[in-house]
Image (cartoon, rainbow, N blue to C red; front, side, top):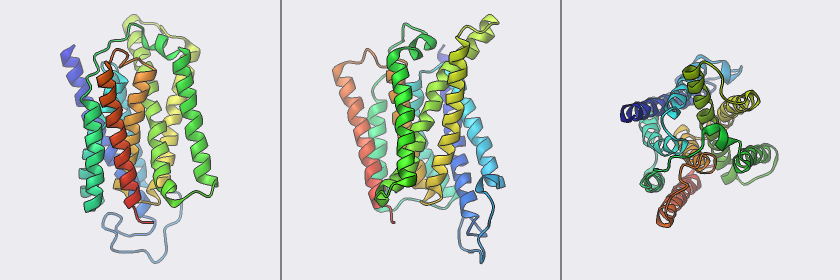
Length: 302
């Protein structure tokens, strides 16, 4: 079992690298509209490119890398709980800073590095809380509980309402800067939540030779999983089209980390037996990470 867990962590590491490179490639595709050299952005086009960004080769390559990252996350979920996947995801923040420096020649300013430090500190505090509870029920039993269904439906409703407000309401610039990468991360976390169920169903089917979960629930979960991937890409690119890649991706990854961990707690009972002090440390870490994101957002230029 230890070997399988180590393999799961290896999958998560490769997935984090693949995901960061994917998002940076999507940002390059955005830069191609105005620049001949989208990485360095020194040669501006006299006439901006037309056509859909999503049809450009760099964007399509980014989608393939994103799909590979999701597949590795799904494989890791066979042996690891969703909260562990979410906590491990904070490492992707550091990976992204390195990838963005290499791929896009972007790096945070001095004050932004301090904000990044707050984000990493908060994530590390949350990681310090050991997840040692093994649920007594299977993923199908857990995800069909009223509290799990309510959390999933509430998450979707909240993100869709927020997206509608960002598209149509006259909101402050700060909310627009923070909004799109944030809701992309929140809805992207549903991918992991749904993926745990799908990974369990696939593993049981391979072991028994038959489907052991409800077909209607599996179809619903699969649709929600696919929808979370599509909307996550769309909303992330709304942010990438407007703001620096490293900033959007850090906000996305931090929100994804927090929401994935939260889904593991509520839907899959990953931390049901935590003591009061451990809950306090975890919640404090989440608060510190959110503060770091807020500080970084406030430093962005309009």
